Length: 369
Ligand SMILES: Cc1ncc(COP(=O)(O)O)c(C=O)c1O
Image 1 (cartoon, rainbow, N blue to C red):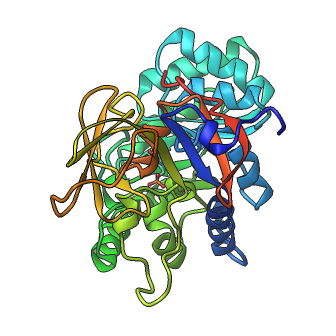
Image 2: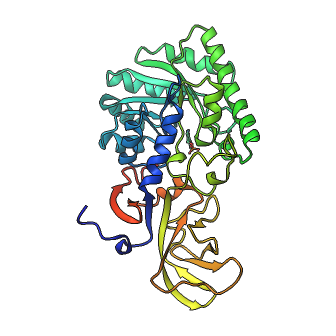
Image 3: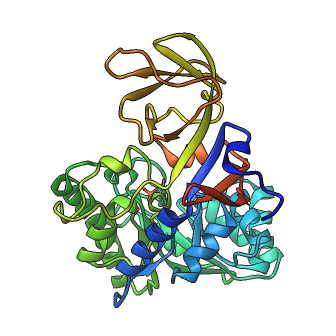
């Protein structure tokens, strides 16, 4: 793109993605699904970006997931037309928007309460559409979802009284089991989550209900979920970008290269150097998330970053020596949590072999409702 500055000219702090690493992560994930019965429906809550959703679908994903209705609305507007919204949608005005969206795209919604199902039914009847609904099961996250086992029955019986609702299946996601570092412990935690979902699915089928979709899983459980079987769709998100939290986990084959590699960074500029042991940079909490701890300085193991306020950070030498950086020099930071960092930015600057190639709109920026 001719209107783009070179990388040094990008105003910082700026969110960068390494195009080659991103493509390799997307291809590697898609490759895991070759000759498998399971389908890949990546979670777009990580990137919120229509360009990346299109890359994932071009590589074989059957659609995407969104966490929120507004996120789905933004991505439908950007041309993505097959979306599972993985959080129950509550509130009459919001549910009316959901069914309007379902007129324009293949939308699936989840529910875990009677209130939610009744609202979905009323709105879809009023708008004369059929809404595809999954029941969410709490498989250990202690977040949304009915208890595993027969608790789904009451909701299913209610759901089946409404001709405007179509029961598609069950969702069960165990986020706390994704980032467990040791492969055997991560395996056990994810196996236990999967078992509660499959147990519930079995009871539901025995009651005579057909289950087309059993969905769950994340980047940390993808190898495990594929190996164990049972899910029909997997919804990993972070693998496109990775982060320092995910970068610590052990993959199935510890002797081979990691499955996915960090592609995301935040470019920051040194703006003050009044102490030989501290370089002050122009990024703080407003452009880099801190919920999962500190970022890592890319390609500079001699440096560590600390937050120094909303708009400031400080770089220090890990050995306490003087820091070798001049005012105006730039460094890249690998976020500790990709999703929450991406959500702070409007643009993703695409870098290939060190040169700026493009910039992509974070289409669903600010869409947390
Ligand atoms: C419901 C749901 N599914 C899938 C994911 C993707 O998981 P990950 O980012 O660990 O790949 C998330 C992430 O928070 C999620 O909340």
